[in-house]
Amino acid sequence: MKLGIVVLITAYGLSQFYRAFLAVLAPALEADIGATREVLSAASGVWFLVFAAMQIPVGAALDRIGPKLTTAILFAVCGAGGAAVFAMAQQPWHVTLGMALIGAGCSPVLMASYYIFARSFSAAAFASLAGMTLGLGSMGNIASSAPTAWAVEAFGWRETMWAVAAATFAIAVLILFIVKDPERVKSDSRGTVLDVLKIPALWPIFAMVAVNYVPAASLRGLWSGQYLTNVFGADATVIGNVTLVMGFAMIAGNLLYGPIDRMIGRRKLVVWVGNFIALLGCLALALQPENGIVYATIMLAVIGFFGSTFPVIMAHGRSFFPPHLVGRGVTLLNLFSLGTVGIVQFGAAPMSPMIFDGRTAPQGYTIIFAAYAALLGLGLFAYLFSKDRTD
Image 1 (cartoon, rainbow, N blue to C red):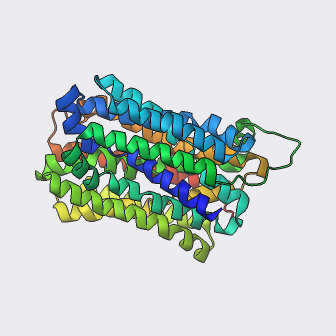
Image 2: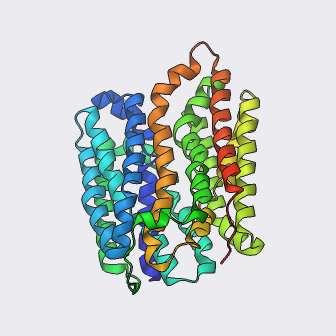
């Protein structure tokens, strides 16, 4: 089981890589096949939307088939296959197609790990194990920056993508032979996702998980580079350093929130306070968007670290799931999380001209940061009505 978790964490690292690597490939893709930044922004949004849409069938498959086959098949056929389509791209829409397939391929990876944690480990350890998986797997996000830039420069973007496709397929094979399914639940009721939606205690948690990841994911993967360039004139090296700091802050948050949850013993308080501090970070950038790169870096790190409460929110939701609905439950929470990110990413391109029309760059980014603060505020208000439950 432990070796199987290592393999799944490695697969999740690739999933993190796939959601962030387009920024590095953007110049080469535009020069080679005419894929503009607007096209790549939409392609990134498609990845998140397909990933989110797949959570419903993935949840059913985890409960009925098990995590091993579900993950191995999707990761091999759609994940590796999508990366191969990307590597062979001749037109911009080929990139979007490849990202859609990759999104489907990556969709079961994290939830397969969470399903195993919920079924095979103590309930009290769930948040720590979930955070460990996110933290260690997020190294794939780090790999999508400078290491990928080096590989593209040394070998070319197509060769780099073929190597990533091969690695994806190899990990899918390891999942098939190493990961072990938990013992099947013996229940007269098979259940559906509608049964999960009928649990009233989950709705405030859905509201919180829907907005929790949006600021960190969007700022890290979409807005931070443009913000640093447009407001401070930062070059690629400075942007890489700032986003690297934010990436490591997110990893640290994922690793530390689990132990904090167990130490404090009040899950709702941990989630609420952490996201409120992240909201203050967004407001700080909205009020002073021109206050220097050091200030911006610190605030982005604050948003990344304190906003990394996803494992604790998942543990909170998981505490209300009956055993036969664990797969559907965790994937539905993930749908709310990644689906909102996908909508925001996909809508960013058409909204950008409206935000900056007739405004200076700092004024435009004030609106963007304030919007993320408002989203978190709505989620925090709804989460006040949640029922605390600690395993």
